[in-house]
Length: 176
Image (cartoon, rainbow, N blue to C red; front, top):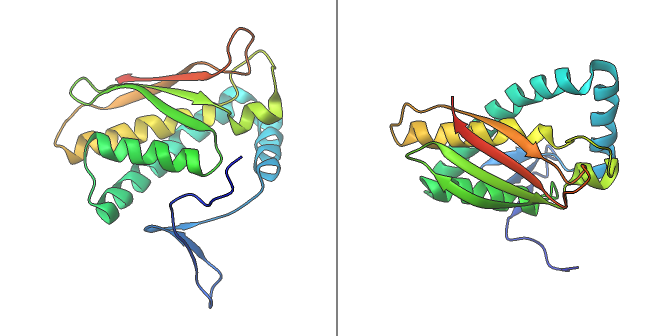
């Protein structure tokens, strides 16, 4: 395991205690705390309903994040999506790798290894990484709009490492 900090500055405001990385305020919580809350909400609402809620919220959040980070770092196009995958990977959600991306077509495939959710759920026979789907579509749509494209997308989890026969997750983004 690496013992060095990732290349992302964390600033802590002495007056407010607010943590900031790049252009955005951040929260720092243990993985078990977050995933246990996720499981608790899923138990009450059901995975399908919770996935719907998370998709919309994640879409909006990814759009905002990509917009702010592109502005902060002077990024555009695929570089924004690459930066997003790098930062998600550095923050402990899992390791995200772009398998393919085509902004003109509005398509993308992302591989996920070492998912924080799979570490807790284990092999449970269903995809458990659905929280990320809205993130990918929101990121793609923000990048596309910034380039003047009218294409809007939808994302889906094709399979997850929590399912038998798979050692990683796969997500697909395509035009609506």
